[in-house]
Image (cartoon, rainbow, N blue to C red; front, side, top):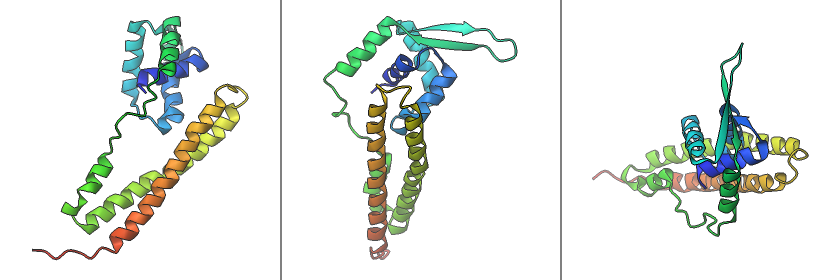
Length: 187
């Protein structure tokens, strides 16, 4: 997935939306499995408008800062549907994990450094649990507003919940294994 397609998807069902709200929607939904900084979102919005996938309107406000409202164009909808229909589901994408790369080479640092790394990983993963619970509540609240989309949101949430559970299980086992490694003697 590209960030552009995620933003097009949000605009396709949300309708005209400010960049601020798109950023918030992205982080509360797609952010559970796709990271994007606010600056990247705004950069992509500008680029998509130049491509003709979006149109924007500047709204002048008296008491508040001016805002820009984005809408998906017919070209943008065509691009989104083309991307959704493409045979490349992204399954061939290579997984990149700095954490796993560090874990692979942790023998260079030893047991204590590896334990610290895994415990930090576990904390980060455990912090996802409340976010996933919040996502479940939000999907339930929006289910009647977006009946066509909600089942698919539930599927992505299920993937996040199962992945989080598996990552926590892995971390617990890794900690147990590492704690039982005999510390190497210095040469």
